[in-house]
Image (tube, rainbow, N blue to C red):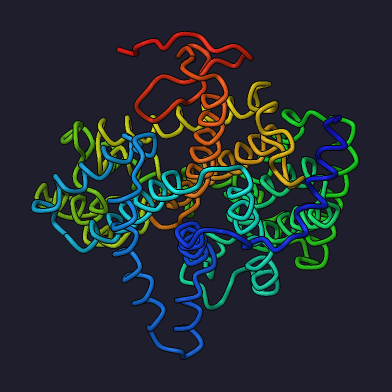
Length: 467
């Protein structure tokens, strides 16, 4: 049977009930990620329904831990997350503001547990498909709600245009490759619609950092897409969509005036100066605590104490007293990790990104393409899945230069989970076919978070040890 024929048959088979024969533990994983991505608990509270779903979601981590106890697999252990958790635990008794630390700690533990559970429980590409669809559809759900207001009014994070804009850029990058990689017509149209929605949502957010992220993601699509000629047409349509939205939403040139301040203000005025003052303060604090930083979430309290003790009365910009830094966010995830978690935190975060790009490189390999053929129900092949996750992660990484997202939103953790999950399932499938064969580390594919990755070839080679 040819590849196209097999995919078409799989696409037709996908019309069967998606939950038919699905084990309860896998359904539970879907429910947990539905809570993360769609936040029905906070929606219910916002419309006056109380906190019952908020409490339910918290209580559901009891069965999460129980399932991990009985179903945990070694390849679900991702050591960079353990390092991050360790930093939080080390600092917990000593930080100036323990509440600020706990806010971030809850996110790290929550997403680490869900990632480990998902990789331990899901076993096939078909089971990954529904997770990918849930991930995709959130951009439609929130994009439609947020477009008229440049944010989702009821949402605790997406009500802020500095979150809504980058979120829509991330969705655009992922949706483009869904549209290019699916054989199911409705998802192709849906993917392209979300791309248009992503451009429109980013533009109306009026956020300069989000616009920079959008430009970088579009450039990545042009460079990385295998179908360059197709992108010329689609890219032109996306550009026209953006220009139309600019003319309609900002008819008096406000958009271009705002974007011009990117170069005009620099670090000498406005928010550019404010951030530059904070980043300089962060650099000075980092030099006093370079190994483990000043404590997660505690840049503001630490800066206030440090500069007050040294008699600083005017730090520049809006900070005429160090006390005004207490509640400030650094608006740069990398500077935040540097000053709050030191070299150890930077190493853990860098390791996450290194493993991510190894995962997506592996998913693009011929050996994975062959193993997954006819097993994705026509939704998306692993090569386009890898490119979509890569575009989404690039969108996150660029936006994190301008906005604090890492310990506030679930974006990086979700994208990383999907990359780890897909590459791990691919490895299991290939090892199942190859028997005892094991791949080499040099290929860059991920075997597990703790073991050497897999060769990007069709032949298994002996296992090698990594020092």
